[in-house]
Length: 463
Ligand code: PHE
Figure 1: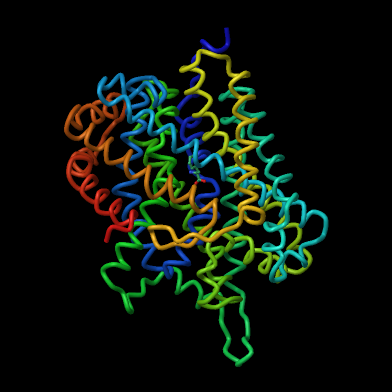
Figure 2: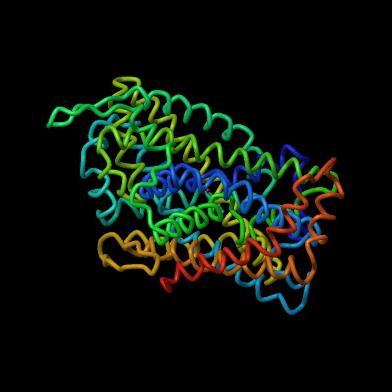
């Protein structure tokens, strides 16, 4: 029976691309640029990169190591490591379950923009107010969300190998190329404001890459670290069982150390380049004030770049949004795949049944999120300082609350109960070298848990 068959990746490249397919998605292209812009650019970028190669590496190594060692999905893996820690598996399950409620909504926004540009409505999309009118309309966001959710569900329904591997191999490199092209173009932009000052793409680039310490307070700095950390979890798809599931599909002869490094580099590169594409343009057209737009940033700024490109802009836009759609699909597939894989194990039902039930549940939940911008609209101040709607509450609950909790518990489990050797041996089993083993030990035992606790308290608004 097909539900008994354990899927596995065909080798190292298949694994790296599939994991990168999960990692590189809306987090890099939509979420990273708006956070970086909100936090003023350069300083956020610097903090993020430092965290990516220390924390990101530790969390990714731990998740993938746990997966390959136990050969189980998160729900069971924690219990296998230590019976008393089974509950962490349950917690990890809640995170993708929450993210899934709004991922398809943003996937729907992307789908909408493909249609807008493909039908020659690019100029309208570049106007102020277009995006707002779209998300506050009642039916359209739901229809586009359902289209995106249906695509995701079909891939998951078909099974992991056919679904994920093939997609990632073609899409990932293509996406990077087009982002680079748009980023270069956005550096050539310039705009003259009413008072006669000219803002250029290069000025915007400097805002993006040079840290600005003016007016920085300790509390503001911790806020930036907190944003960067939440983004890191999200972007690498760690601390939510996803990379554990993927790790369980990896064969024993795959060089884990090298694979993990490649995933880290690829993901960080994609985020950096997406920022390079969006932030200078935001600065040019909307100045510093435009940088605090939040989740809508990419949707209001990119159409303006495409408009500047003239006729080819429409074509570039369609190709770009299609690539982003695929990147978002590979990520959403990984979220849904984890939920489905866990439920298959838990309820002993077939992939097909579980996928169908899951698709129906999320069609309902994601509809509620869409309605959060009209019928169910309200504004709430979140403990991390942001003001938001339903979508932002989900994002906050998963990225600022649950992910730190799961990471703290995982660090304690691996650092103090099984001891870091548990993971290090798993990595060394198939890697030619593991130079960062020392860094891994210190991070997982001391630095990561302490810092995560501080950030967690800050996220809760406790100081
Ligand atoms: N990491 C993916 C991205 O950057 C999103 C994602 C989040 C995937 C959570 C899986 C789980 O878009």
